[in-house]
Image (cartoon, helix red, strand yellow):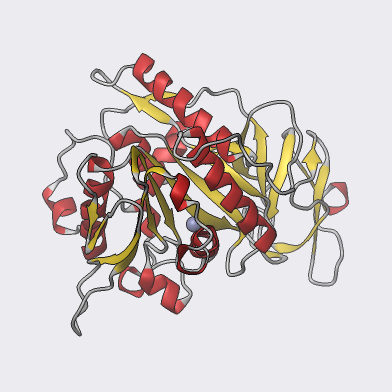
Length: 374
Ligand SMILES: [Zn+2]
């Protein structure tokens, strides 16, 4: 057997589920904002799968999916059949979870899912950047080291806008002189296989410049995929602030199917319970579109999961009296073929705010040269 895995206070024991904690941000009042750790070890050697959840504190489905996968005291987990190890962190952001906010109060306004280590090891931070590293970034650096040392695959569980469909994100993969385009393509093929095994609709992330500008290469999955170069992806499990239980249950099946794909569990894939599955015959990427041409009240004319075609009216913009604003009777039309991921929340929009989250036709291959200046 390979030596047992230790993450914080938890050390894996073959045939057992071990619970522990990983030191989080040290609290001025004592103790740390510790992350919960669960290590499930099979009796036989095999791969190591990490499942992380709720790095955004008001997204609960990651936490509840992990609980549902385990059942009370792990009663529902097929431990006897497991080869290898599953490491689960039900929340990567306990402060946000307690206060029902996206960011922890000690990093208010900063996105914790942009704080994992950046891919380029050779990039030296400037003195200013080094001086401004947050306590939480240091915690994530330590956790990342555990993932890199003891992790073959990672799935990071999230929620998106209220009423959105559930889906898996496919991140770009970067290559450079040392990790060639052929290496990147091989990693992408393996990552795609894992995403396919999970079974949810698949949406490509923002194109390259946007992805880096938004610091998505420092998201949990972006960092593990592009720095550790292990298959990793983000799942969006519909609404935040609320658990869609049918989607949670589908995610539990998806995770067991990932374990089957990784040969950690025996047997063929389970059928995924029915979830909305927009049918288009081309790859799609995410986009926030269309945008309100002026401030006003938006009535959406489409909903999550609807397939749309270029030129279709998707919303109507009115004034506060309900009178259409602008040309075309206030209609906002889409410039794209694809489908609706979700309606942006509420009906009140300021000029240039996006009114829909769409998945639209994508022709990029998501294999990109890593730019010099990142
Ligand atoms: Zn999230």
